[in-house]
Image (cartoon, rainbow, N blue to C red; front, top):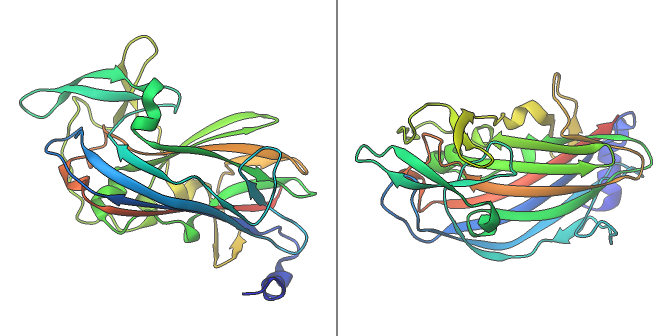
Length: 277
């Protein structure tokens, strides 16, 4: 669709800045292992890209540097990854399971923060606002992860967003992005509904992950609309640049993160939408 056609479609929404950005990441699972907190799931990440669609002269743009260049598309670096189940409460410290008892319950963990890139898909992109202040949301209708219920239920999306007003951390479940009916659950921790946290040593804490729908705009195609009660993931001042660090990982404490989540294909598409603040 041409730029002029997009502007014609969106002309009735002049009172709302409706800027959508989407990022595509392809991930293919190549191998499997034999137990929960498994250790040899191989994934290949194939050339993710980022793209924006804007309403008239109000742009939510993407770049790979805080200094630009800014455009409607940015190709993110491809990576050949091997992902492992990990756990985190805040995206600052990450833990891996190191021992399971005969019942399959993980009883010890080690800090793997320094080696996060060995366990998760990570990267940083930048969003640039328009001449007006913007509230930025996710855009659920253009997001996807996988059609497989088991992996969908086990995955997490983490975002660390830094603006001039501070840093906001978000952890989202991916259940909203498909149908998790049929996913198998099996407890692999001593407690339900927890993740691993800690500074000098590990401990359990309540899982902080939220549904993507809580921070998303409604809408179809390239015309996002307000969703009642939705919380923005950040607010951009006029022409402000925000860094967005993303972490895509399998939450090892999730009861769905078991053998059945392996050997599944993932096509991850992230979308951001903005409205006037």
